[in-house]
Length: 114
Length: 114
Image (cartoon, rainbow over all chains, first blue to last red; front, side, top):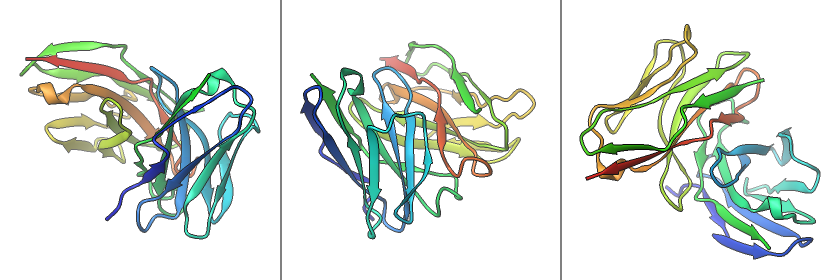
């Protein structure tokens, strides 16, 4: 049973560029949430996707956008990158829009913005 | 809104010592509480959880009890090993209000020396 997978593992971009991160949820899960984890801090909720729609959003600017595909996989897009966007981006999957309380996390994508 | 506060780290212990990592929370609803562990360069792994007051979560010798009266969920282990060295995150998820969005503390780094 495959767990949550994310790609790429590492990414280096420069300020102003755009980036796309990808996530495949755990088998049987239909909900994907994205988190940003800055160095030395806990993960911060970006948004959640269910039934191909954004269901909840944290306190992140519109430069952060996402998408969910019919197979439940998801992408996180960040436009106009800033140095402060450097972080570990974590994807978490769950079942039924989070009405079950447990999320399973992927290994993350380490984004470095120069 | 919801929040989680963890004891500040880092924590350094000798092998076989007793571990306590304090966690308190603020929530408007009836959250489930979690401890996650993050090893260097990896994503988050669910360590244990408790879904209602007085529940005790346990796994791999770690345990934590959901204390509603003190809004706490302290992590304990009777005898730590070098392999327990990692960052530990306390988190809450309130499916009644936030559809599974998780709120995390800032993490506590544990180093166990032989």
